[in-house]
Length: 328
Image (cartoon, rainbow, N blue to C red; front, side, top):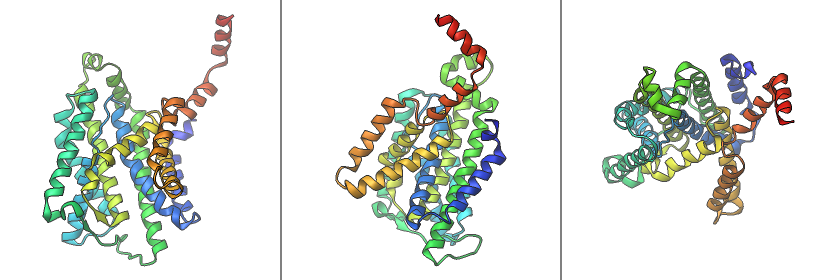
């Protein structure tokens, strides 16, 4: 199992996922692009949740990254996809750097509700700001890649798919390394007992703040990806239902696996697409029942499936023998 966490192996899987976009049907490219961008935000929520805090307002940074890129693209004509993703990440990270230290002192429901309130404050401000298009938002131009213009719709969709998969994959590799680092393990300790972490000489507030900034950076980059896919931005990026959808994906995935976040985002988009196609008036009910089933049968998320199997296969034979002896 050591190869499953090797950064070079993970990067190879990302490359294979990009090449796979050449053979899948055209309609799935857009779906996979949206799933990858949402997985990026949910991955940030999972990073933050390892400290015991869940943000219900990631739409704040999602919209911050999207609007920041849209304004630069509108004013300076910057259309390069890679540059837009980086700019979106910077905008999200800067917002996280400002807000993170202010709310790191809160925990639990207070932390979640405060992030939600800040997101809705931004939503209200965007709706009232006519310079930014008000409630209608505004459009942006078609993205390019290193100066290349894609007029063929299939090629344009593949380009966005490739950029989304690579950006999300690199974030996933970073998160995998982070989870297994000393800082990542300390984040789990903060979730279990932050007072003991303080006694050991580490700052629980500092750890939460850093994780919060990472989550905000991921959300800002995701906002840029969503902007490129839709070529339109509006205040709905910051609305509470948008943030709730990201939490939905994170709950489906759990906090035990990075790969589960991407699988959960793709499953969510598939369930939404097909239920909206065949049950257009009740697709929200289908999504709710799907989440309820996951919570009932997989309370630790989809990632617990292979983690449970991994723990079973890696258990030493003598431990199993001892367990049988104790039972008898």
